[in-house]
View (cartoon, helix red, strand yellow):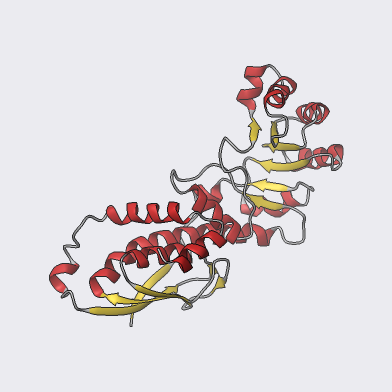
Length: 285
C-alpha cells in the first residue's frame, strides 16, 4: 500500500493493515483465475472507467475501495470524499489499467463501497430526521463479523456517533446481568470494584430501575423499549445527571418523536445490520 493511501486510512481512523487484510481476503474469494475475462481479453488490453453514484445519498468507503484497485495495480483517482452528499451520475472514483485487473477489482470494490455508503446514507436519514434536537443516532455491536470497524466508520460518515467498539472498552449492564447479580446496584458495584474508571452504561426497563441506577452513581442509562411518555419522564427525573439513550423498537418514522423527549442518543442496530446497499456502478469509458 502506498504511504499516501495508508495515511488517508489512518486519518479516517481506520487501521491500514486491517483494511488491506480484509481486501485481500475478499479478492481471494474470487479464486486465482477469472474464467470469463481471461479468454476474452488479452493481457495487454486496457480499460478505463468511472464509479458513479446512481442515486442520492452519502458516500463512505472511497479510500477502502481504492485499496482494492491498488492491490491489483489499477490506477485510480478519488473524485469524492467520505461523508460527501452525492447525486445520481456523480463520479466517485476514476480508474484505469489492464482490463482483466479492472474487472477483477470491480465487484470487490463495489461490494465495499455500496455497503458502507448504504450505512452512511441510512445514518444521514436519521440525523436529518432529528435535526434541531440535541439527540444523536448511535450504532450498536450488531455488525457483520470482521466488518465492525468499517461499518462503525460509515456511521460516522453519515453523521452518527459510535457506541462501544466491543466488550473490552465499555460496560453495558443488561437484563441478564441484572438478573444474575440480583439487582442494578449489585451489578454496577461489581463492575466498579474491578474497573473504577471504566465507562458503564445501565440498561433500564422501568423508571424504578432508572432511579436505582442514578442512585448508585450511573452516568449513562439506556432506556429500553420505553414509551415516549416514559422517556420524557425519565429525562425530567434525571435532569441532566446522566446521559440517556433510547433503545428498542425505534424506527425512522419515530425518530423525531423520540428525539424531542430530550434523550441524548437513539441506539439503532439497523444502521449496520439492515442498511440497504447504495447504488453505485462502474461505467467503462
